[in-house]
Length: 503
Picture 1 (cartoon, rainbow, N blue to C red):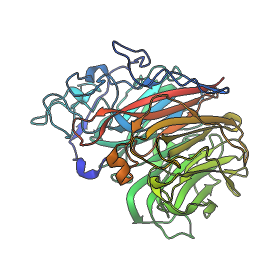
Picture 2 (picture 1 turned 90 degrees about the vertical axis):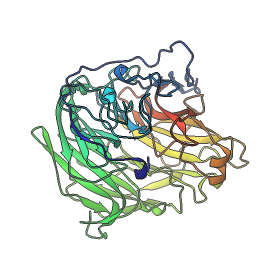
Picture 3 (picture 1 turned 180 degrees about the vertical axis):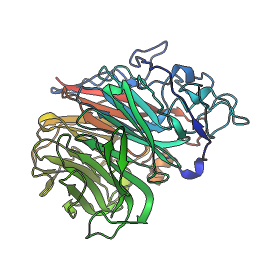
């Protein structure tokens, strides 16, 4: 995530979005070959498609902005969701430091009513025309063909009315009716945009008076319009505790929302005591789950459970060990069918100076009791493990990991970082997964300076994978390529998608 010192608040704008959607086939290669494909052949059980580059709006492509590939989206920390019809939704943090030929690094962007959805061509005095701001504060894409092509929703509605720039990042939840809830965060406020019909029908956009400067929101939804939002304050803030047995001091606040007409009405929020957290809900039932580090980077992993749509919560239970961890990743929770819930996390007490451990924990009674086990496939440093549970509790699992000169998997100069994924049907406690390289190209190569400082942040804070209704594993990820024109010792960051299927 970008440091707040690198950002400035931008002007408030009112955009009337009247444009229709565009769809760009990013898997088709143009004049010169692109890195990143074709997909890895995988093994006997899993094959990967060709990596897909997420598109810029054609109106915002700037051949002079120093991008190696100006037609593709620049950003990081991608999130992905899928509805019951297989439509995919993708959001990511925009790279805030790009500008057009008349502008320098940074700076806000805005538009005016009637100018359409693309604010990238709206010039500002002195700053010039910025080219990061295709639409929204964060990226938001829809695919209605299994990830082959991507673009904005067909129906914009008033989805940018009053939204402010620059943005932090967003997240996506989908309820049992297929309604899509997209939280788009800025430095001053958060916006909730809602669609039906696979992004073809805009329902509502509303400003959320919740966590300010939220630098890692989570949202999930289930049932008939019940929405759960975790807001990250960055530091511990006191408030009303989520349960009576906790202190009411924590970095994350929980907000429960219910749909009234086209609006989602949220409560005042309650504090989740502890460190980094993530949330999930069963699609058709009342159970909601929050997983959290007991402390920031240690103290064990705990889970909070609600069996009544988030109205009330049981005291948290510890589900596995966490003695220490490098700051690159969160414990991750996924809700399956018939009471199955799973959590993954990585433990690295020495950071990247030693190989890490990957854990899974499983509950089959709606989060009451748990068993955990080690699923580490080899000696490596693991970044951002992410899981999802699909129909019949099919598990999708992905992570980034290094390959290099370390004798025991530790972080060294020249390490190449790759994307790995696995699928397993109803994985039981003690069973292992076969992880395969998804994209054959390295996503990043560690420099001497990064290895010396044990800097594991070049691929940023997380990425995400989901199991689609057809059983495929769909991954939104980041690809670093070429020198960044505005940031010292940083690379250009491109947004990617890949799909894995059982052979």
